[in-house]
Image (cartoon, rainbow, N blue to C red; front, side, top):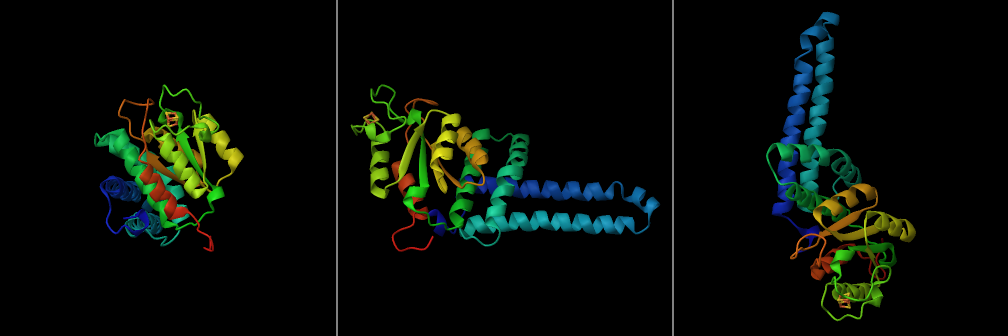
Length: 262
Ligand code: SF4
């Protein structure tokens, strides 16, 4: 089942959706209190003022509720219903810090919240149903995906890999050849940014841990980023692994095939 055709909300996304609902309720409660508490003071200035401010607060509350509903619908249906690009901006720039704060209040693990954010972001990106030429897609990998005792240096050129199969690089080289996609290995955020500036992709498919993917998605906005989490059987930043089939699946959703309109 592909993300674009999902009709149910998987567990990772569900957490973000739940936190969004809680945040929306808190925002509406704060808006109500911000109107109710100074209400009497406003009446002293002008008897109509409480009603005017009340209407503004109702409009703001309505916008918060409608926005949350729209986000839930977009990700649940996997379709660009309305203003998906704008909603991605709201989620990345404004909602994430608030949701991280709300999640912390409920004692939720930071990485679980980040996982749900990444799933929500991916859903919003794929719901736009973009079709991009292979040469405008960049796959960005962390260098810890390469086996630590491999003597070949694939940073800079992944094709130097002799494909012995002892780490995920082999499968990734195969994917790169299969779709004629550019794949880069970056040793850190600065190098990753440099590669993006040089290659000017229209979409980045990034593999990393929760923390790096979250900051990468934020830093790259408005450039769409699909995040794929790496697996860390030996702990962080050492001989990490990626499920190549997930990359293949994500690429198939955004790749423009010959004769297809972008
Ligand atoms: S597949 Fe083999 S040659 Fe290629 S990077 Fe991994 S360990 Fe090195």
